[in-house]
Length: 593
Image (cartoon, rainbow, N blue to C red; front, side, top):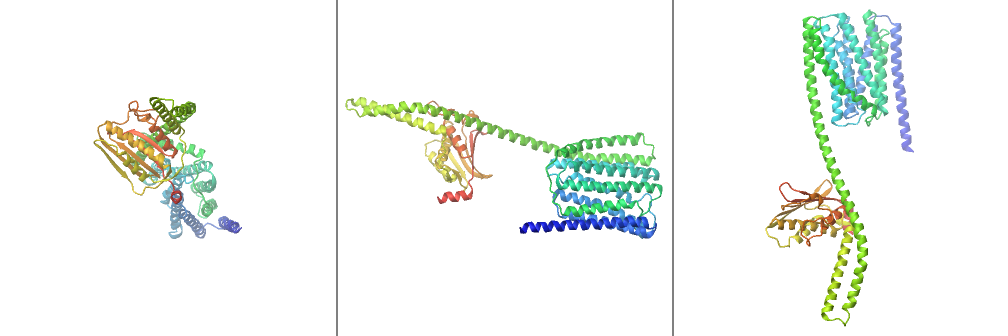
C-alpha cells in the first residue's frame, strides 16, 4: 500500500510539473504573439525577440545535455548530438543578436551565420542515424550508421558545391539566396522525412519522442520558409509575426527535453518497418558516391560559371571522393571482418550439428541394441537356467564316474559364464542409471592410471598432468572409473602394438566443465567416427567384443557429458571427455552424507 501511494504521489507531481511547464511555455508563446502584433518595428522589439529566442535555445541545449548525462551509450550520443545541433543554432542566433543589439547594424548579406544555420541540422541527422531506439547489434549497427554518416557528409559537400561558390568566391546574391533557401528547406524536409519513417517503425516511448520532434521540426520548417520568403520581399524584421512559429518550435523542443527526463526510453528490438527502411541506407550511400564523379564532370564540361567557381567545384568533388573513399574502405574492412566472423560461426554451428547428429545416431544404436539384447537375454536365460539345474543334479549323482562328473562340472561352469556374459551385456545395453554422488575426478583418474600402469610393457611411458583441487562432479564413481580404465587400456594396447610410446593423461577445469584428455603416440584409430559403435573393434578375434568404448560412451552420456575421439596430426589417438561440474552446495551436501 505504501509503495502504491508513493508511486501515485510521484506520478501526480510529475503531471503537475508537466502542466506547469506547458503553461509557462504557452505563456511565452502568447506573449511573443501579442508583442509582435502590438509593438512597432524598432530596437526594443528586436531586443525582445532576439533575447527571447536566444534564451529559449540555451534552455533547450541545456535540457538536451541533461538528458545525455542521465543516459548511456547510443542514447547518450543521441542527446549529445541534439544538444550540438541546438548549440550551433544558438551560435547563429547569438551572432544575429550581436549585429542587431551590440553593433546596431543590419545583417550583412551573405551572413556568416548562414553556414552555421545550415550545419545545425547535420547533428540532428546524425542523431537519427544512431537510432537509439534499437538494441545494439555490434558491427551491423555500426555499418548502417556509417552509411547514414556518408549521406550526411555528401549533404555537406552539396552545400559546398552549390551554395558556397556564389557566397564567397564570386558573390551573386540572387543565385546564392535562391540556392541557400532551397537547400535549407530540402535539408529540413529530409530530416523530417527520416524522423517520420523512423517514428512509424518504432514502438514505446521512443515513438512519442520522435513524433514530438517531428512536430517541432515541421513547425520550424514552415516558419523558416515563411521567414525566408518575407526576407526576399523585404518585409521581415526581428520580432515580426513571422517569428511566432520559430518561438513555438523552440518551446516545443524544450518541452520534449524536459518530458524525456521523466521517461524510461529503453532500446527495443528492431521493428520490421525500421529494418526495411534501413536497407535503403547502403543503396543511397552508393548513389551519393556515384554522383560525385557526375557532379565533377558537370562542373568541368557544362558549368558556365567563372573559372574560380568551376575550379573550386572540381576540387570540392575530388575532396569529397577522397573522404567518402576512406569511408568506403572502412566499410569494406568491417564487412570483410563480419563475413569472416559469420563463416567461423557457420563452421562452429556445422561442427556442433555434426556432433549432435552423431550423438543421436549413437543413442539410437544403443537403444536398438538394448531392445535386441533384452529380448535375447530373456530367451537365453531360460535354457541356461535349465542347463545349470540339470548339471548340478548330475554332478551330485553318485552313479557317474569321476570323468563324467568333471565334464558335468565344466558344463555348469560354461553355463554360469554364459549367464554372466548375458547379464553383463544386458546391463551395458540398458545403461541403467546408478546412484549419483559427488566424485573427485582427480583421485579417480590417478587410481585408474596407477592400476593400468601395473601391466608389464616395454618402452611405454605414462605422463599425468592433473590439476590439483579439481572441483567435484555428480556421478557414479564405479562407472566413471571403468570408463577411464577402458580408454587407458585401449591406449596401452595401441602403444604395445606400436612397440612403445607415450601415454599422456591430463585433467583441467574449462568453462564450467572438467576436461580429461587421453593422448597416445600409437598408430591412431582407423575410423575415429566408428569407435563408439557397438561391436566395432580392430582387435583380433577373441581379444575384444567391441563394446568397451560403446559402454564408455553410454556412461559419459548418462553423466550429461561429452566424449570425442580423433587422430592427432602427428600420430596417435586423442580421447576427450567433458563432464559438468557440480555446484558447491551439492558437493558439500554429498560430502556430508
